[in-house]
Length: 309
Image 1 (cartoon, rainbow, N blue to C red):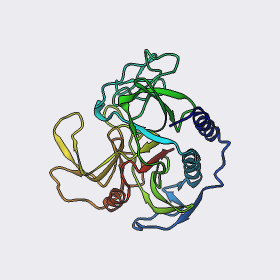
Image 2 (cartoon, rainbow, N blue to C red; image 1 turned 90 degrees about the vertical axis):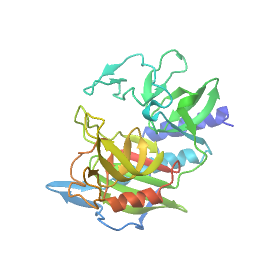
Image 3 (cartoon, helix red, strand yellow; image 1 turned 45 degrees about the vertical axis):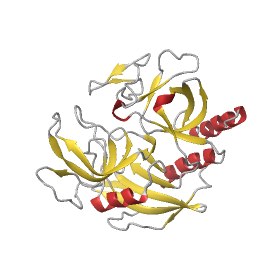
Image 4 (cartoon, rainbow, N blue to C red; image 1 turned 30 degrees about the vertical axis):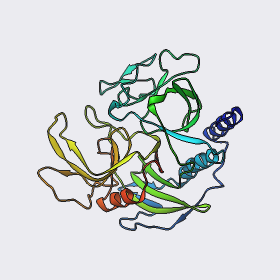
């Protein structure tokens, strides 16, 4: 049971972390690779640009999660993949983006999202939350769940049907996706140390209407996995191909291997476009063997996905 004291403590911890007053000195990272193909250095070059793994941001996010975990909270996630729980009601102030989608003022699309209500106005939602977002379950009031997003200073009320509780009280595995540097790392907590298990090139989503969307930023929970994720041709319902070893974390965004366009059928291990520039449809492309590593290594609802810039 979440007491008023715990609610206040959760709010204090999350808001302190969000305001950058909570340090990263308690997080220790150590390289101990389980997957060692195509491994990148901590800092490297792409053409004339300097690129690197943003370990300080990783520490900041890990510290945020660990700080809240110490309060023995109940975790949950927002879910509405393919609007399985119903299209979210329109927010008070909506916009239309270049994809002709209705969004909130932060640009989060209504489609496949979750309505977030203020305590003083339960008639129309203020904002949308992204599918797969990690939340702290702070209590239930009627048909609404009071939640705290890990990336937001506010408390929100969400209709119960959009919130899924998570059994685990702690997360031991994390995937770090960097849109700016086009790389991906996996980390695993062993005792008091976070071990870096892989450091690889990746290709994230591209902002190019009407079909290609960027990979959303945020803290997500790994939701499900399919060994073969089929996709259609742009603007058509015709089969376009498949992506192997796909692990989904938000909406239609998967971490997966190199796509195979039909009429091809054989898996492709590597693409020279990995680690270059965004060119995916929201998903995060990897070498196929690294996608399989993630697929085998990362448990559903037991792995966090950090998408950073």
